[in-house]
Image (cartoon, rainbow, N blue to C red; front, side, top):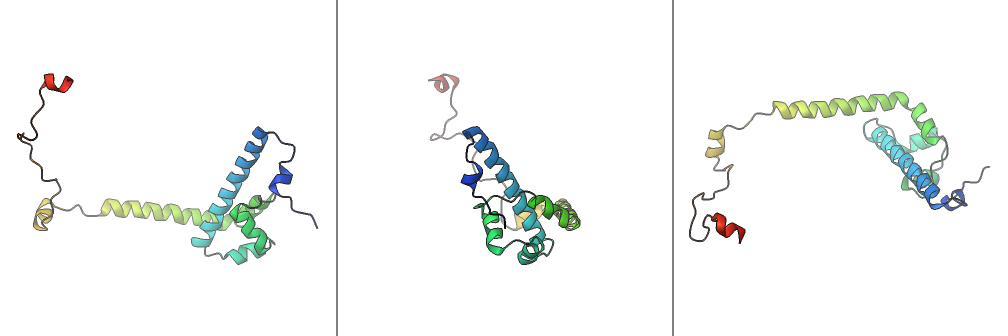
Length: 146
């Protein structure tokens, strides 16, 4: 059985820039992994245990990948995308449709009439006076520069 490498073992002998590139790439993979997992879980109705068993990954390793304690093994993200590509497409379609439905519902919402607002006692504008008072005089150009 192949031994899983830790991040320090994987980055051994790399300079700082190479380590930065390596970690940023792994971070992107983990974010994509999380996005796919949550979209399949929330909108696709898939269970974490079901996905983990399909990919033949132990529960401990799955949690470590998800939390970022271990990098994703090479090809895992590709395998997940291939295995669930139809579900991922269906979920993306549902998410786009839901966001469009929410947008159109927002556009269809009735705009309150001014009479309704006045009857409810709410005012859209703050109650302020536009006339100058002794406490709040209009500044003259000479005083404004001083």
